[in-house]
Figure 1 (cartoon, rainbow, N blue to C red):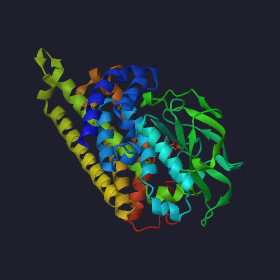
Figure 2 (cartoon, rainbow, N blue to C red; figure 1 turned 180 degrees about the vertical axis):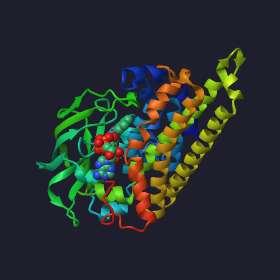
Figure 3 (spheres, rainbow, N blue to C red; figure 1 turned 90 degrees about the vertical axis):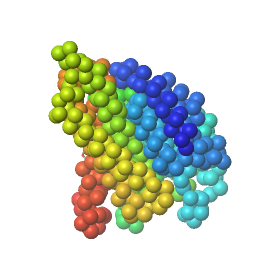
Length: 399
Ligand SMILES: Cc1cc2nc3c(=O)[nH]c(=O)nc-3n(C[C@H](O)[C@H](O)[C@H](O)COP(=O)(O)OP(=O)(O)OC[C@H]3O[C@@H](n4cnc5c(N)ncnc54)[C@H](O)[C@@H]3O)c2cc1C
């Protein structure tokens, strides 16, 4: 997989040249996505039998961190696409068949994955106003409709909305609950097209070039758009195998922390103070901030890669899932802490509009609030450490 990381490294240099312009306009980074498509990286998580790289989670983490060093927003778009292709590719055939998946589901999955290897790009649409990403609270509904389903609702944030070939949409059944009385929540892969109307209103503080607009949806989809071929899989999967909902973001934000550190070092080395080249590097307080940022970033990377190895070896294991939440919590918090600290070391020059550090500081701030937010991830870990029942023992439900 060193080839994919080398490709990502080459692309990251190109993305870095374009990032300021896409950020200024909060525009979808079309040129970056074209590069990803041309390089074959959109097929990273696609099994080799369908024309992709057949990568594992650790490979994904290394590629996403590398892309984030060039352009965090483009890496976040890549993360959403990898989450769709990675989770689809990762559904074990015997398990899916045991749960009732039909031949139609496997044929549809093969078509979706082959298309990704050839350059189709996908996104994820869970978040709704009032529900955030809590799957159990979603208001978008689906119901049986002729040979498939009708999905109706509004998604408030979806990276790349209006620029992608299909969207993984989470919706709840109009009728039907599980044995806990929770609504049946399912994922559908919804193709772009009539019935999906984007609200072009995205103008946030950071990660601006994700073009994460919302959309309204009123669309008929074929039966095989139902992910896994069975209704009600979204909540159990979020609890049992949260890697593509949780740890995949961590890779992007560890990459952001590393980008911050690299840029701060470059800034301090080129900064002249009172005629002295690299003058600020003579200050012990400045060096100590860089040293702490280096240690924190490397610690977050090691925790991320530990989680990734566990995901590849033992997906769904309770220890794997704890490692996943640790990785997300640390990556989001470290990216923000490192960015906040090094701009203090670098001074106002690093906070000037248009400077790379100023953009990375804004991008880093999204890390802790991407799902599950740092507070929610910490609560999940605390609940487990205290031996409390995650369903009955606390007020906070991550999903
Ligand atoms: C750059 C960027 C890209 C994004 N891209 C996508 C995307 O592609 N697809 C997508 O679906 N979403 C996307 N999101 C949205 C993201 O998932 C949401 O921001 C997140 O789910 C939180 O929702 P919210 O911001 O509306 O917070 P709110 O729901 O308003 O909540 C505010 C805070 O309170 C916490 N909170 C609220 N209620 C509870 C509760 N009951 N229990 C515990 N904690 C609670 C939340 O975790 C959050 O920290 C993106 C966000 C960003 C910043």
